[in-house]
Length: 478
Image (cartoon, rainbow, N blue to C red; front, side):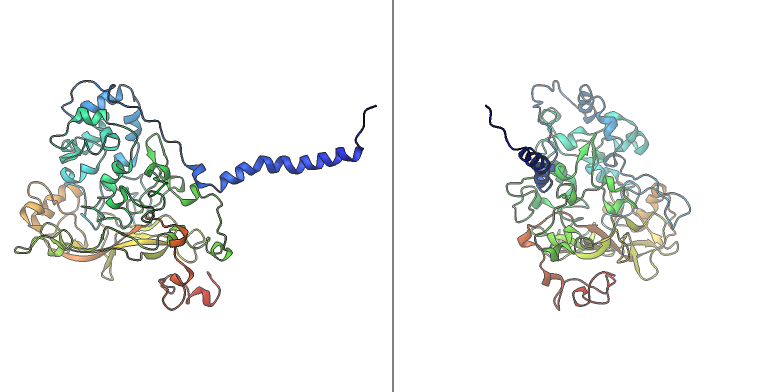
């Protein structure tokens, strides 16, 4: 006779199953949820093109036509991105009656000032060829998409005037070297933007080509992450829009730490109480320009002087005086991911002596804003004394300031390109431009500690941030 189990055991088994099945089901997901590496995108398998690409090439356009034989839609997809247009969609902005677009192709900055009329130099960082034909012609042709800029081995390829391949480039060798973009591909433009290594950004420079873990915990050491590990890419649309060249940015187009660090809390609950008001970057990027210095001031009013010795870090006749700094604390502002204001061509200069090229949006009253680190770049740049707006000169090429060292000629030449009238009288005014700091991320043991921000020697200007004083003394955010 078979031995029977008591009926109550069946109930016990049922209860255990009810408990264990959900636990076993969700445990792997909970573990992956807190494992940032589990969220990294799968990188495309590299296909060696050495035996695929045939023939000789004399122009970049010929290379692109060869690429499109297999990648039929690639150019169309690139042409739908801001890497190609260098211009945003139209925005309704509160200080203008008409919608306006914002981008490198049509806006002023406080570094090299502007690209319009300066395409022979500026477009060496554009993903296209043929800018000598003018924007309308250049932007219309699929064959003008420069596949090599992002996909060729940087050791084999470089760009020259008007975005075309540099003289002497072996286009066949470059085409055969193509693969998925690396840090070297992205860094050629993003590390050297604004006129040289580390000029524009305080957290992007050539030290990140092959960084140590101490320089950047993501890109260095065993992680060795690519730019596209964070800047997720689909159909050539790359996440991560730059604050300086936009007004408002769709959150779906932005990169965030939470893409991979999903619901990841700190062991110390005191730190977790900061998460609603302090960005991850604020604590984990305690300093910028850690190895290579970055430009913090640029005085164009000193440009063109004779008899001064050129030195990349202090003075260049074509650009004026500079101050560089390294390993310094960022500037902290409330930030919700957008701009409160972005200077548009023709806007009046600031009444208080400072003209803001951009103003990060956010305040202590904004529940979507967090305290965020920025590099502040301060410049002295030209403006029209009578018309009271910033001027964009023609700097490179025939008649440009870099050859003639004549501001009047440079402004007169620019009128047709910018649509701004030059009155014949110019001066120089102070401008501020903010760059969000998101790279050179440090590990937890190198992040800011309590005393870094709080106490007598804390780095935060609490009153400027809207607090009546150090929050640790009275209880926190309003």
